Each structure stands twice: as C-alpha cells, then as structure tokens.
Length: 187
Image (tube, rainbow, N blue to C red; front, side, top):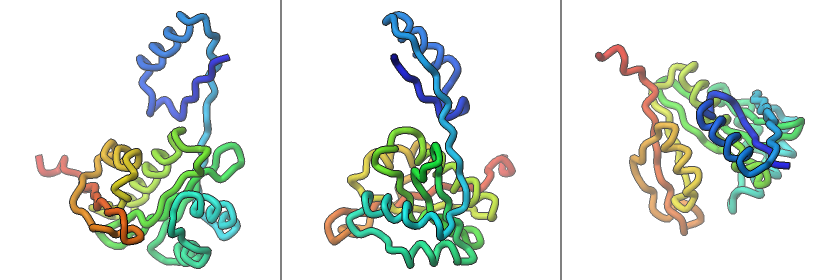
C-alpha cells in the first residue's frame, strides 16, 4: 500500500496532487491519503525533556535546560513547539523586539524530518514576528545545512553575510534575513 502524506492543501497544489494520484494509479497502486495535523503551541517547561532530546540529537553544541527556561520566561521571546500525533516533533525559539526579530533556535526530531514540520514552525515564527510588529526577521544557519538554507530561501530569506568558523570553530554561519515590511504601500 502506498501512502501519500499531505500537510496542508495550501502547501500542495491540487494539480500536483492529481498528478501524483494518477501516477500511483497507473502503477496499479491503491493510494491512501492521510492528513497529518501539526499542532503548534507555545513551549512550556513540561515540554523541555522532549525539546532537549531533539536539541541534543540536532546540534554538536546543544542548548541546555536553562537556555530554554530563559526563552519561556523572557518578555520578548516566543518559543513554540510542533506536536504531531501527541508527540513533540520540533520547536522554534523566536525573539522579537521592536522592528527586529530573530530565530534563535529551531530543530525537528531526526525521525520526523522531511514531513513539513520545519516549514510549519518557520511559518509560525514569521507570523508571530509580523504580529509583534517586526519589519525584519534574521537567522543564522550552519553553511553545511543545505536543506535548511533551501527552506529559508523558499520562504523569502536572503543571504546577507557569513560568520567564518562560527560553529565550534569549524563551520561558517550563513546570515540570512527576510524583509517583513509590506511593500504594497510604496506602489
């Protein structure tokens, strides 16, 4: 049995979905469509055991519990988690102050990657930044993390600089920014 996972209709065009179904039917496969529901909500201290497992699996120099507790308590921080089927699958830590916002940390559980969870978390962070009045959203990403860089560029982030040997004195950090200001007023 072939399974097609769809995160949301807004992420998959109807035409592309029809093409996939026709392709599967031509191969005499009976597709079963499963709708995945990603629940996004503010991070709490109760989430930290699961968050720390993902953090440790994702980064050579992971944040510790105190880092996340600080983000949960900080006035201008908006950490959120993604839950999939009653399991914490990822998180994002956004800081927004005045006209600038920054993604401080984002990760998805290794066995949940490639399912659109990072996209959902980034869309959540972008929405929160806009809601808080930010005009610019910035982040740093390891230069070797090609999948993340492609996702950020797809979301409208542009490369604006490099921090040489930033990660553990080895890998460069790519500095990326997304302009959140509505340019429709300038037309």
